[in-house]
Length: 77
Image 1 (cartoon, one colour):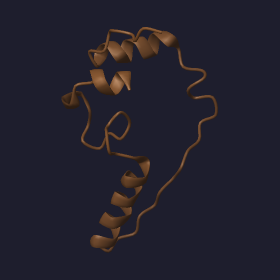
Image 2: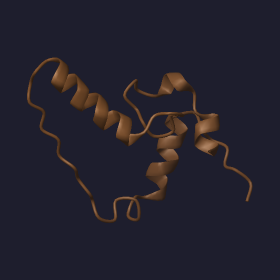
Image 3: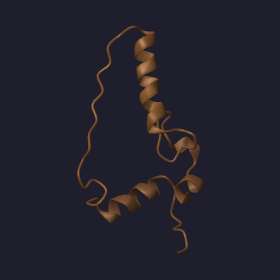
Image 4: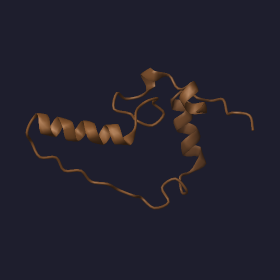
């Protein structure tokens, strides 16, 4: 909630799902499938599960990304 409340919408790509109210992975997937049916083409979808992706990220990389998004305040505990 903190990131969503602080994040400026213009900082996100139109296709961004995380931290966007009312946008979900499910809607992203259904959009791809619907577009494929509309233009009558095949669609190949690959799902990746990178083990430990969030557990192994460097804290400074997270802080740098937050700074790039103009989110510098951390919520109080």
